[in-house]
Image (cartoon, rainbow, N blue to C red):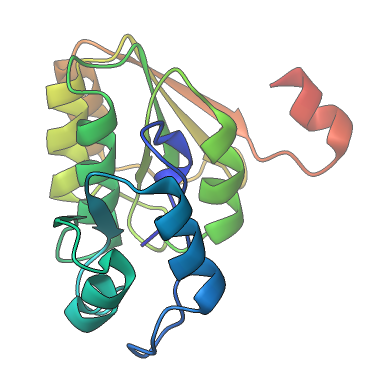
Length: 178
């Protein structure tokens, strides 16, 4: 899943069609122009099947940043991009593509995912927070009082991080305040 890939700095993110369809010519042409040492798929076989990856790579070595689900893939991307840790970790709701994609412009830490309902942290996210050792974890909430499990707050604090809960921005001026 490309949801949280905006933080990657080692190459562009190129999209392939779903359903294991062949990569479009424009994608193959761009890979040819860039001539990367390795072509990396983001997500498991359901996101980018092995045949797509091989066609896109056109004989170049391949790799994959993936987990069994979106949260695990986000954790893999975050740990890849920030191997020495990060001062800030951002959390986006696991089923909210806009939150994760907009957060891709952030450069000081990875975007990790909550569960799809936004009510707790998957184990992969907790583990990544611990490994990244951030000073703060920032999460946007839909409304004050959004439920968070005590274990999740404890996991963030155990990593030595401060949990910052921001209201979900509804207007452009709200975004400027963040």
